[in-house]
Length: 122
Image 1 (cartoon, rainbow, N blue to C red):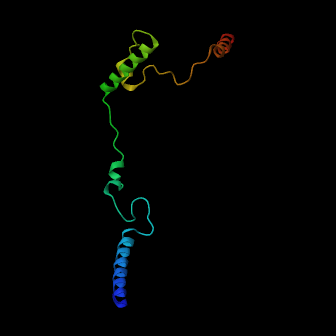
Image 2: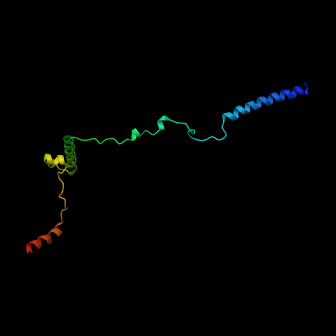
């Protein structure tokens, strides 16, 4: 083998190695980032305003409200230990005013006595 033949074979090997190196460096980018690549989109992750729209409130019929209120009174009576809860009028059950206190709170016995004595002396 002559020197020119050996140099030709080395040039061929160098060309093959350079081609292999180019293929390997193109396959792996220099800086790898974690996560989804920039600019890629996914339909499932896009914001859908209709999904978060305010829904109209549901209404309840008066009879359903009475039924629920009666069931709650039974639960309270059971917890309290009484057999039957107090009966309320139908109008009070519908308006929700059953068992409500007066607008002003009750005065304790010590606060009521001076007022009663003042009326008696006047």
